[in-house]
Amino acid sequence: MRVLIIEDDLDIATNLYEFLEGRGNVVDLARDGVTGMHLAVSGDFDAIVLDLGLPGVDGLCLCSKLRREARQDVPILILTARDMLDDKLAAFDSGADDYLVKPFALREVEARLNALAARRRGRVVDRRLCYEAIEYDPAEFSVTVEGKTVHLSRKCLRLLEMLISAPHRVFTRSELERELWGEEHPQSDSLRSHMHLLRRALTDAQGHAPIETVHGVGYRFAVSDGRQA
Ligand code: CA
Image (cartoon, rainbow, N blue to C red; front, top):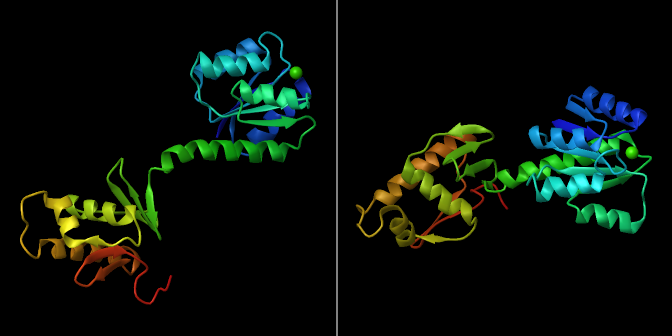
């Protein structure tokens, strides 16, 4: 994780710097608000640790400038000696994500930074659709099972996308056919052939395919035989 520390107190800054760097992070340090603002705007950081009482630009002002003028959404953890409710509310109001009152434990700073950075990454991950170990990424039309890529034809991908988007829901044959072939009528066993290919690919990847045939109706994603929900 790339972390920017903006803190004028030399002892606190050094402690934070050495601790976070020692934990495998790439750390930058600014000792005043102007330098901090410059680094925050120009650097690509996963999180910022920001002191409130700073020479030059005050922490609250820096925070709101980053959000409102520079349009930066990097997670910001405020560190401060001010512990009144109004101070905390002002920090959140200026766009901070989290708040720690001095004195603090270094491990808590790290834990909070990790949580903030993970939540930010989650904005991207959230688009993915998962079922058991299967993960479908609609942005990249890619499928992985236990992290390994599974190659599927375009129609099989579309089938998987529909089923995984609503696990346990039964999709009727005509619904799936319309999705894959539009108004042109496919050959009678086309859907079954593609479903067979999809099942085989998933079975090859993880030993079973969680696709259930609902006789006379269609198909659905469900825990497969022998694996009770
Ligand atoms: Ca300070």
